[in-house]
Image (cartoon, rainbow, N blue to C red; front, side):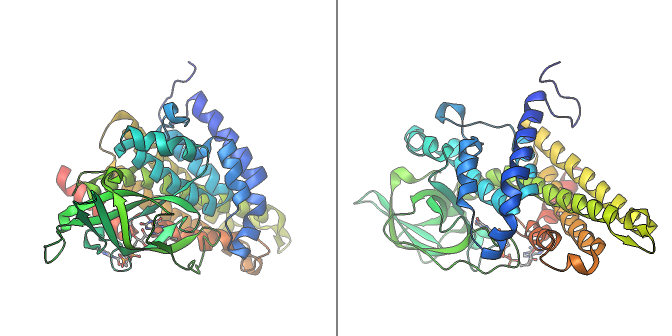
Length: 391
Ligand SMILES: Cc1cc2nc3c(=O)[nH]c(=O)nc-3n(C[C@H](O)[C@H](O)[C@H](O)COP(=O)(O)OP(=O)(O)OC[C@H]3O[C@@H](n4cnc5c(N)ncnc54)[C@H](O)[C@@H]3O)c2cc1C
């Protein structure tokens, strides 16, 4: 049955996308990943190729020139791209968060103005939720949006932190507390989502962060200083911004979990290839029981994590509540990415500790999957809450 899917198997169309992105990642993403990491520079040529392949329009509706991918296809693309480079996959997934917000919460004129160009690759999107003093608890954010009735504009003031694509972006989704000019303190329930072109007056991009891993991905602070945004650029009603962000992040977390599977798979493949070649005590490492058991654990972790990712994606597609399964997928897959990359370095011995092999980069990159789009501790809280509520 063409297009039919059984269990976690892919449809023919999904498998075709996976094969295309797998080949692209192998031929055009992975070869430059080590140099991009060393230079801490995002590979713009790879982004242009993503655009040519239509992948920058992954979550853009077809009416606006996009691919309108289902959740499984989105996950598959993230796994394959991250297998080539986590930095590239991260940049694309954040761009997709922004196009998803526009498609979901924007009005017709927002969608017509931005989505066709973003589907074609530029402007790149940035998602500005975190702040220096509000990461795990975005409700504690300080950025404010004060309404000016005379100009029918909001005035944004505040600082965002850790913004992926910060210096590459042409447009950003920004979260701020809508405040009444006379109020003493902003209401924590007033978070609102705005669309802000990065060339708007009052927007300033800070210095790129020096990071442990994901070095080719661009991460910057962004400040908003007396930045005037027309009311027409408000994507949600006042106070609806945080729940809208959390909706978007359920899909986002499935993407990050899939990326973690991609990195873990890359580490597993590198480790098995090395273990076949490297000989000690007169035999290949692949014949040594301790190494074989490591590989068995790594392989099981990759498969189990992918199954959770696929189940979370299936729930999204079926219109079921996927929050807990998405959190389980992100928690389990990011842990698998850490343990698998750690073991891959171990199987490479001293060579694994050098930049001559990719596994040290996989290890450094993997760590971020336990942090961004909600830390492991926050995922566990979401899972515990869901578990106590349903049993
Ligand atoms: C490379 C990179 C890219 C990023 N890209 C973006 C982006 O594009 N847009 C964006 O908005 N953000 C982005 N982030 C931010 C990221 O989502 C936050 O770093 C993350 O949510 C954690 O927030 P924090 O760093 O402030 O840590 P904190 O919230 O200060 O947490 C510190 C530690 O305390 C733990 N903790 C906090 N609260 C609790 C609790 N209630 N229970 C148990 N443990 C708790 C955390 O799990 C963590 O271990 C990025 C981060 C990185 C590193």
